[in-house]
Image (cartoon, rainbow, N blue to C red; front, side):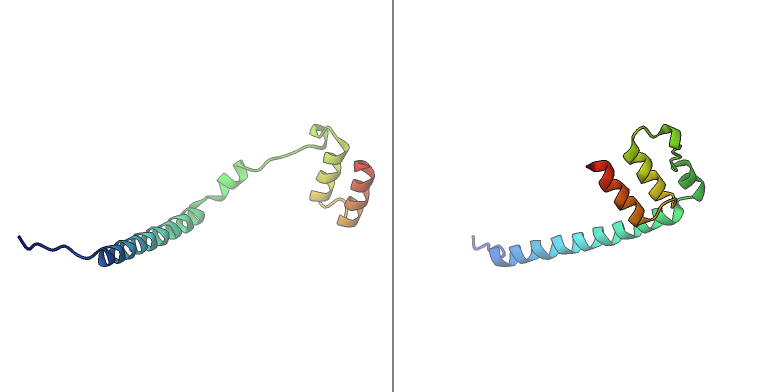
Length: 88
């Protein structure tokens, strides 16, 4: 019986190449899948996920200040100055 198999070096090389091919295919498919989902998201769904916060719902002065800054009622400089006063 003179049966011989492939050498361990060749087998290791084949496994590495196989893993790289499978990884490349998976990453390519995943990228296309994610891009497809991003294109399919309807604008109606985005509106459903919008959070509406009223100034009456905010219970701390820092949160009120942050909300004013996010809505554009005060500038960043005003926000930072007032935040330093509140945090101290």
